[in-house]
Amino acid sequence: MTAPTARLDALDSAKGIGILLVVFGHAWRGARGAGLLPDEALFRLVDYAIYAFHMPLFFFLSGLLFLETLQKYGTKPLMRGRLTRLLWPMALWSWIFFGLKLAVGQSVNNPVGLQKIPIIPLPPYEHLWFLWALFICQSVLVFGYALVPDRIGPNVLRGVCAGVAVIWAALNPYIPVPSLIWGPMF
Image 1 (cartoon, rainbow, N blue to C red):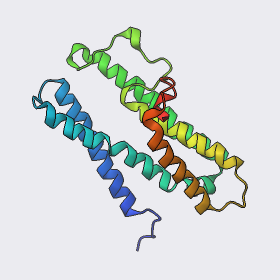
Image 2 (cartoon, rainbow, N blue to C red; image 1 turned 120 degrees about the vertical axis):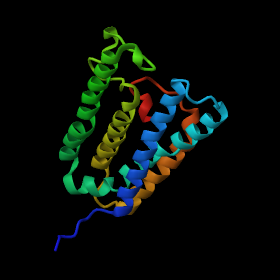
Image 3 (cartoon, one colour; image 1 turned 90 degrees about the vertical axis):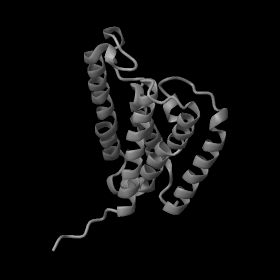
């Protein structure tokens, strides 16, 4: 008999759907960049549908259990974990992805040269922006949580975060993106 796990199958299924949408979305845009999709209206319809949904899904899912994770590990261990689980993979995959693009030369949709090497991978390199954005968002939450008195319950914290998220989403089209470094978080 196996020990029960604390994993929620619905969350794992939602992540799987999100991953499939990410892969399809990048392939879809790559096919267009290669000139394989002549129908512009169909391309835009599918592209908008996928990109309006899949990354917000991942950020929503990462936030669902974030408070429990923060309470379980505490602020310092969680921030160390964010460095190793978000920033290090962002840096590593930036260099790997850049190296692969450099190696294949003109065979890619957007060729690169050595002068563009991401020595410090900020701003995030191409599609890896989401790791930086998630790191910044979670860092803000961790530092905010450290300032919140213990007497405020988890449901109040969730409500405040949900309210801020809804207001931010409504105002986001009107918020100027301050830079390539902070822009992905917005």
